[in-house]
Length: 321
Image (cartoon, rainbow, N blue to C red):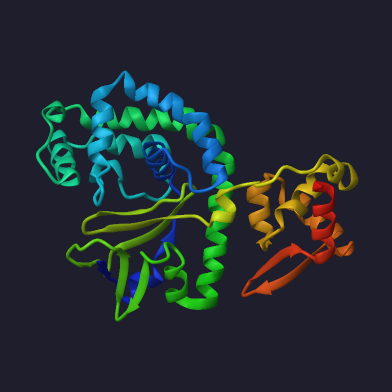
């Protein structure tokens, strides 16, 4: 398994960070995989996969770079630069573009676990990767970035509450269940691959959520390390069910949408992220639904979670029928 040795000071100084480029790379992985893990990803793939496939069909060198650089166990490092504080997409992709060509070729060879294909023995691999990232950002991520950012911010809030309630072990174990685990004795398991352990005490450690259900690790030795993880599925999926027209007419479309979402517990910040409504609007809807006894609330650590009551469930089910 992949192990990082982390002392208490490094853990105490670790932070969550949101990265547009990490979101783009996660989206590229989803396009490369071509299969969805939930309905939200399925709809996004239906909208963007055909154009992505056409883009690679006319650029076979970049298509080969993607196939080789996204290896089965290792990703070419220059494709996943470690997120930096306050860095926007343009600043991050510039770091990809300025990777020394020899380093890029060597990293692709490592990811491929074999000799570099002759068609990739060239100096423009970083430029090609940067151009593809820019295409994915412009066409498939930036138009929904405001909503994605709200989802990522809500996930950070939820993880922070989990951190304070259950400590490091509970929070780390929940990032990528079965892959990322706190083992005690300063040991952080970051994946299941058999690689030599790394001593990262004293370095910057960040945790970076992405909405596609994927994850990886990256680093800039010896100063900066990152664990990229998929945000909570209930957030990433977005609204899963259409609001019945009759329910919308009864409660109002926005309030009905909140009720429909609460088939599983969600916090106010999560509802804001998923619906795109303002905090004040969501709060007003929840107060009305609470007064009508259609939803209930309970405290989980520092968070307050809302869910449908039996009466709310009956109302939603009846309107769907």
